Image 1 (cartoon, rainbow, N blue to C red):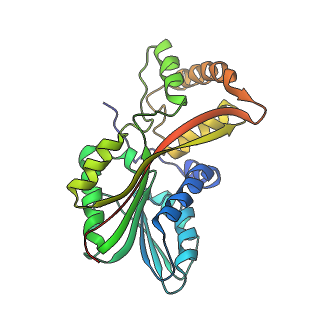
Image 2: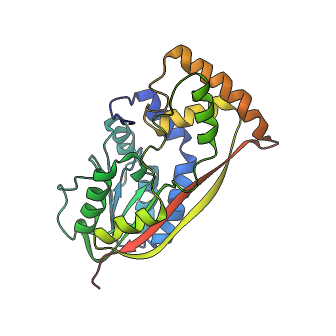
Length: 267
């Protein structure tokens, strides 16, 4: 069973994520749009990473509103703190423990590409905690990896790892189906507004760009079970496999995310 470690992050990985997280930032903006975040609201960003999306939301809610951004990785919170806004606060914190926040204290909460790093128990606690800290009628939104439609890199990577006698580990290990998302929300008392799988097309210059993104996004967990020699072998084999997907724009890969929007009972 894959075990995700929060101890593998490094300053280099955190900086690489800050400069290479356009994919997460861009689909995060779509999530914020779907949530209808507006001026004056109090918003909680759970799993904020280096704070790019939180800073964007702080601009939306304006000085009358506020954003609190938490993440379990201190190195990434340090970078988020550099995005100084009078209405943006950052702190180290975990999705499954929002005890620092009072019941009913936020209008909106969101988790952008976070749930697929949490195991089953952590997921349910995270969604239940979100329900607790939201006001009556408050809105929750999240995007998470889809188990029905895996990222196109995943079967290629599994094949390559199998060729050297290894299993795939650390690649969005706790993904959900749409039905499982609905159950998760129902158990926490949410009313589902929309639930869909969205497809995104990415282009990468080469395999090294893909591996850098995977390493920084997974805070060091991607391929962490391999030796340096095995990593080099996987890199070379992946490079050969991925060339078949090269287009004039680069190596083309599709990824699929579940987008969920729900609200608490009340006003």
